Image (cartoon, rainbow, N blue to C red; front, side, top):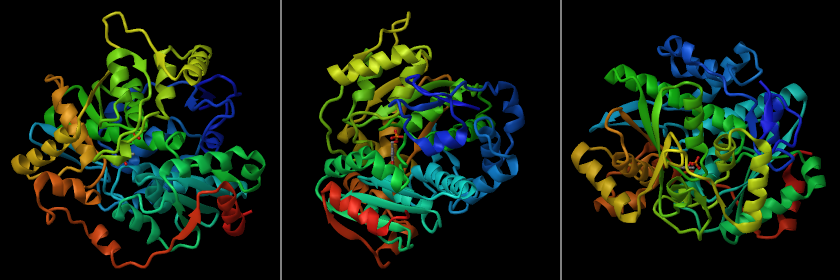
Length: 462
Ligand SMILES: *Cc1c(COP(=O)(O)O)cnc(C)c1O
């Protein structure tokens, strides 16, 4: 399989190059040259274990040999505490897809455990090394650290805004004492961290010299790993209910997770509806209602991992929405960066998309959903999952089962659960309890570009 840029400005590259590249040099995002139709394989795949299914799906996209891929997938499953990796549970009249059994209790582990193994594999084949630089407001940094800890060829530098992330998130990062992991508490805000990050990556000589790499959600391998659980969950729910097609509700920030579901549908998985759920940062919900994409101010909410205005994977969706016309997309993205907005015309029936419908759950709806699911079903939802469940219930089409993606374990966000239920004895997880007694390591650093570069020079692999 070859990979092309959404903006059409690069020669096609292979899978391994696509993964190491992150962003394409023309500013676009990488996508497979075509999406394989696997309809006639679905029945053969239906009974496979999570790991075996992952191998089959990934072989459609990755030029790796089967045995090597099998080892990568097996290693990527090792740190999950549930034998099914991503189990599905019936709760009331919904199905909950639990994506939080990895080491940092959020769905990003599924992709970042795999990405860490894949990076190490490619680097050792090439005799190369890399330094990963990331800025995090929470979940991405910890999942990335746990994905690459202890790897010989990788060092990781994760900046977080000092004093501005939750205690659980901070401890999940700083309690990792492996020599290749560097936590940087930046004296500033998350925006400062992102500004520094952009400036360091913008210094192309520095980037080349230190083999700087990124792990953000635009990396193709992350999407590939996330497609697997859409297939896995659909098969389980079809087994349970006998339904022909299924729907998914996905709490969304950067459009990464839901885009994996969109691709699964394009591959032939019978998905009749995808419900996109946002918190008060509703730019994507507004787009799927009106066709206009226009960023507004970022609001702090109960579901901080979705507090995003410009969704970095949205360009990939637009590429398909415009009929895979890279030139048209490039024009649209140029207009967007000049005018700060873009718009697409509705489809003949009036909808913006055939598959995706969208809605928003605000603070009250989120808290109420947590409280109701706990009372009626004894099921504790984290605030991100609650956004998906609230919107998924409201926008469900009654003719097919609804699978709601549970993107984090409630113990990761105890404040929201406490506020919703009035209790704080409900949210326990041994992995969180353990954190409080673990030793930590973290460097404090000013929000200057040169300070961060100096730190990488002193501690990175050259
Ligand atoms: C990152 C994250 C999301 C949003 O996922 P996207 O791929 O950015 O849409 C939702 N829930 C949790 C818990 C997350 O960490």
